[in-house]
Image 1 (tube, rainbow, N blue to C red):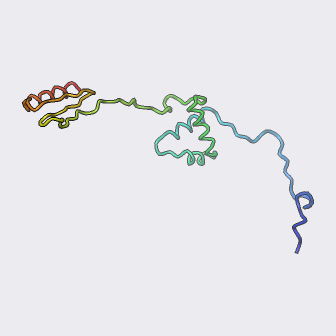
Image 2 (cartoon, helix red, strand yellow):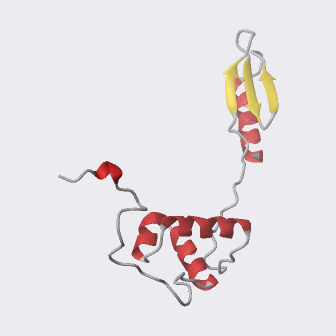
Image 3 (spheres, rainbow, N blue to C red):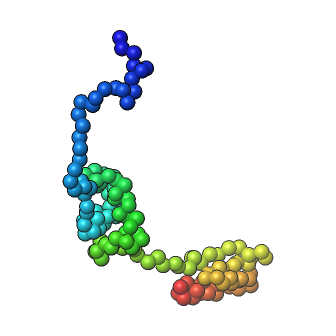
Length: 137
C-alpha cells in the first residue's frame, strides 16, 4: 500500500491531460430585447424565474439581475410588457351609528363628521337624516 502522506501537488507526478483554452471568450452575450422579453415573462402570474432560467439554459441569478436592472431603469421593457398597476382609490369609511352617552341618544359618524341625535328627535326624522347623509356619499 502506498503512503499518500508524502504526495502533494508539487511531487504527484506529471499530469495526464492538460487543456489550453485559446481564442475568443466563450462567454455568451444576450441582447437587451431578449433580456426584456424574459424579464417580462417572469412578471406574469404563476411564473417562477428559476424555472424560466433553466428552460433557457441560464443561471437563475442572471434573470434576477436583469429584473433588478429593469426596476432601476437600466433595462427598458416594451410598453406592453411593463407591469400594469391599477390606481388605488381610498373611500370614506361607511356610516357608523353607535349609542350615545345619554339614554336614547344616537351618534352617527360619517366622513369625519359626528352627528348626535337626542332622544327627543322622532325616529322618522333620524332616519331621514341618515338617508340624506348616505345620499351625499
